[in-house]
Length: 101
Image (tube, rainbow, N blue to C red; front, side):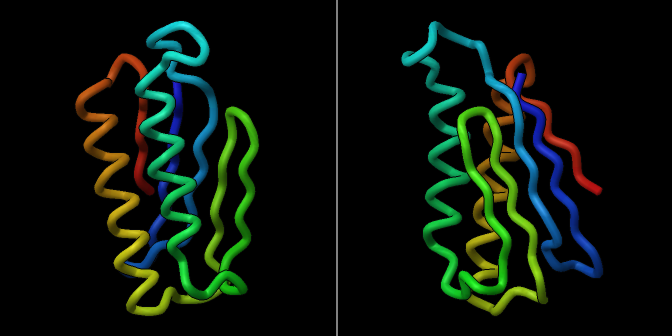
């Protein structure tokens, strides 16, 4: 199972941590895992202020920590990441657990 923890404070993104594997299909054919990875890594790549975040990504793990309040552009990107991950978790509760704090 992929577990995702999203933290916000005062309506602003603080951090994201995703770990694990969906295990919804054999390795290399797991579309749920691929979807989560694509959303997270694509989102990381779309952030404009790269120095405003601490990002880590490796197999089975990704994290993003905001060092300051996101710019309006980055706020939209982060909102999009959150929305897409919520959709995946809702569609595949057996493979993805999303928690908000």
